[in-house]
Image 1: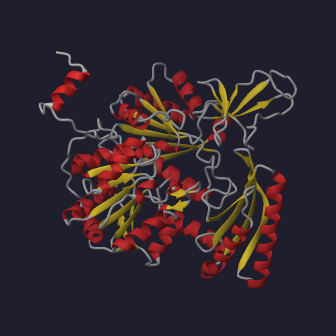
Image 2: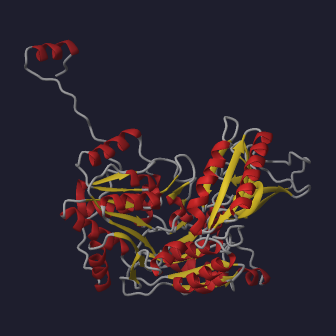
Image 3: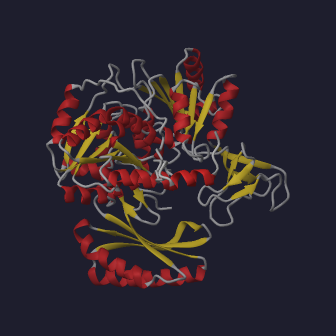
Length: 573
């Protein structure tokens, strides 16, 4: 029967029905369910759990990929919950949250809440409220989850602690690990930093006894870490191979797909071509708001700026000379997919990068589809390098492994080693053995020499010695004062003032090395002109000097010019 509003109001007035407000909870990824699995810990895992559950302060859990760090995290949290405490579990990428959430929901049910920037306002509020009111005791999420409204915290865990995403370099600016240390100290609890390739400073502190160290040197499966084959692409070129894929990778891909197994192809560059150049005059299409070349996206037939997001029509002729000879340079993930489909007709391919994960829950849908074997190959950027666990993946191909190796950044070797180790670790994680084919134009570089055998300790010793000799972090603090303004003259004037003040401070104290003032490597971004003043400070003098640097920055801030101080910035661009 149908009732009108007046009839319902009449029943309410007679007391036949009552009216009340009911809040329907918004549950993120509510369809995500996993069966609870009974996991028997290895002797090393059990020892790690015992150590960490009885610990206070900061501990590094250094375990190779596939060593079972996640099971250790779960057991530690389970012990803390049993004691009436709460816990925070951080992952570096939103894409990892569904996987971790599925594991934790299977074990802890509705006691888990999720917090990250991908939630809508209603979901964020409901999850935050559940934590605040004690209806959930475990917070899982990306870096912002460190602010979860929990009390009586028993453990804070930062997975993939080396990841650069834990440092927020846009407002609000904060270092997640520093906040975690404060919260751990305030709650007198353990802070666990987990990684197969720890940050250089983290491992140094562990070796010096500043942090505790727990190691998991072996995989929990019967298989060893996958064999890594290094392919010299200059030799391939000399032999006449013009494909994106080496001959070895071509054969391995065909064999893997034919056997019904799966492969992952990694290239840390999205789009179809990372720049467009005129062959006649050399013109390169750049963003009008940023000093950055535009990337061509064939799927949308447009040019995009990967810094500010601005879009442009694809070029059919050069705007400088009128020539139609337009060349596409440096391939991206779109191009990889196209060539893969040409290599293996009928192959089922999924692509995972910032372009394919714009929509809500897109991470979950892509990863679920691949996990359900709805695709033979997953092509992606660094999103696919971390934490994912697919038992049917037996082949990993790493394209242009040296792409970031020669950036003007003291961390370039460390970042490259971390990335290739992480992505290689996606192969052979279950009963089937894995294989990794790494393509490079610099096969003799020490990063690949140590990376081939997953020798983190050997790499760390080599790299830490280089940092000591060159006086870069962790043996000094690199400080950048970054200035930006719509008007270039305003930022030049402010930069000149900062430059003079820093020089005066240096001459008076003599306690730090002034590295100079200049335009930023990317001089224009989001319509703002950018300049920087760089310096290097000895750790023992840092506390005395940094306060003065902040004062200088504050004195030069204005409505016309933004001024920020960055300590050991993750990127010098």
